[in-house]
Picture 1 (spheres, rainbow, N blue to C red):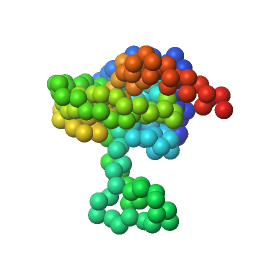
Picture 2 (cartoon, one colour):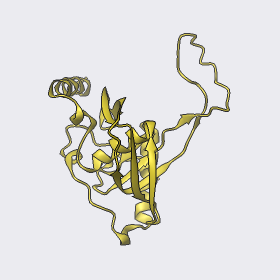
Picture 3 (cartoon, rainbow, N blue to C red):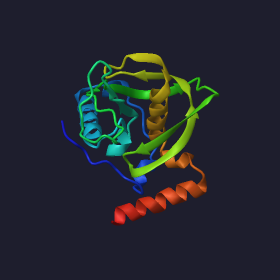
Amino acid sequence: MAIREILEVPDPRLKTVSQPVEAGEFDDDLRTLVDDMFETMYAAPGIGLAAIQVGVPKRVLVIDLQEPDESADAEDCGDDECGHDHRPMVRNPRTFINPEILDPAEELATYQEGCLSVPDIYADVDRPATCRVRYQDLDGNVHEEDMTGLMATCIQHERDHLEGILFIDHLSRLKRNMALKKLRKLQAA
């Protein structure tokens, strides 16, 4: 496994429409890509990563919401005003190959989104609150699953990458320009 470089705005490759993984490509090279993507995502740290973000224009996503272990006691960080949940995180790595969004809900949910390719920029984005997803696993088997909450938002965010769309593309022109100006300042610093 290896940590790969994450492409950042304004890299033009992030606007690439990714190609499907074909039947003969469910192999060791694909498994290596997925392993590297997880290692890269965890190191960043993030909760989702599309293959194009590491320069591979294939329709491959990895997601791990890494939610706190509800059965574990929180560790004391020593800061009484911290406000963070300091329980150990439970990993639940998920791989989605050739994902398709089916039946997106008309009802929208708003989440503050960020992106490893747009570092340190966060904005509220409205997306369908639920959706059904058809995807393949690492063996090429087809699955369909209903997604809700943060997982629905995350899968839609990551799938956008496969179409060359970034979360900031969902913002108004004014908010997008402000975010890009802030990003350029951060990159220059």
